[in-house]
Amino acid sequence: MASPANNPQQPPYRTHAALSAAKQFISANPEGLKLLFWPLNADTTAALETSGLAVMAAGPKHPNPDPDPDVLAPYWDAAARAWHPVSQLPISEPKVSEIEVQMRDVSGWERDWEERHWECQLEDNRLAEYVGQGKGVCHGCGVSEVEGGGYVTVHDYVSTVHPWLMGLRGDILGALGTSTDNDDPLPAETELMVSCRLLDKLRMEKREDWIRNARKQPSPGFSLRELMEQNGVAHLGPFGGFPSGFLQQGPIRK
Image (tube, rainbow, N blue to C red; front, top):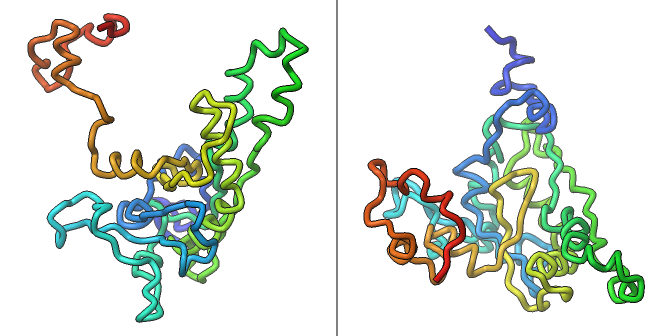
């Protein structure tokens, strides 16, 4: 039997880094961060009370078992002067006492820029056009438990990470511009949403893409029937997948 010190489900809780080093699987609490509707727009404030942060409806009392971006409750209830109950839940399963968070779009910006402009290294006369691009390297944001419960709660996490992300918004727009093969940052008015699929490596998505993913809708223009017809597939495989070898047929051509 594992001793309390070695059991990740019992206090004292280990750090996210220690559990990862021990190959312990860590998932976001499905009743916590995954329910957050977390905007990061030009008019978003760093203060959580006025940031627009909200909690999506989900669960047995809601018709849709998945988080519903169309039914929101404010994270800060101004009338009751209280945070949403989700705020006190642990961010992860198992619980962690500390986590360092990276913004993946920004931490990979320099690499993305270099990959898209490798040819500039061969043309010295063009380098001046790109000096200073893709240098938004992010060193991470540390979150430790501060509520006395021994583990990082949703509120510990968002109250630390949200203002940090707001300070990075300019770099985020630049990184997303580079990732879409554009040397200019996305427009300042671009509406962004925080994606919490990975607790320690956050991503940004445009609001319309984030909402479509939350609703589990396909990308615009995607048609499974058209994809099958283009590749001469009449029926799906016995378990609902494509027939063997379908994905090795090469690129789709119209």
